[in-house]
Length: 217
Ligand SMILES: Cc1ncc(CN)c(N)n1
Image 1: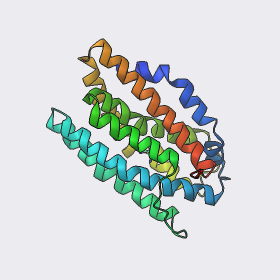
Image 2: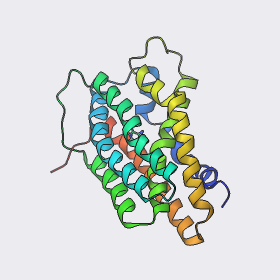
Image 3: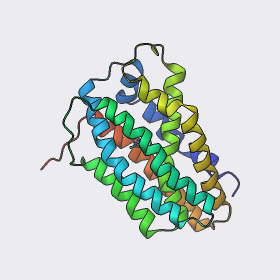
């Protein structure tokens, strides 16, 4: 399959569009997002990333090419180090809550299940929206915001709209495309289902943060 990502990205465009319309993203862009909401998000994101980095390492070990393995191991350490720094900046004044929200639990558990129980191709499709959606949102905000000088969340925006993250996203896409090229129809279908579900989980994650989602019982 030539350029699997382009095709699946096209099919899931409505999910990305829905993310852009979320109040979390609109208020992040105009700088009016309440600090307590952003802190809730950053706290849950730290819990998410702690699991995500293990998933990247697992995927890396399963790849057949040592450059691919190296890429995912570097992503697990490098990207997470940058994100941990962001968390440090934005979580200064609050106590860290180490209980994942229901959505955080759902997203991390979903990724771990797919990566450990399904094919490498499906695992790659599962971890990709975490790269591509954040890149798309970072770019979107940078392009549309009018307050770069005084947005309290600018460090976050610059991280995902920046060149370093772009290079890493492009490499992740290239690896997934390579595996899709030799995948059969059944696996390609499963990859698409997985990519779509992980994209929806990205929407849910922001929604859950905006509503400071709690366990109902
Ligand atoms: C939930 C989530 N998804 C993606 C990213 C970007 N790596 C993140 N920090 N958090």
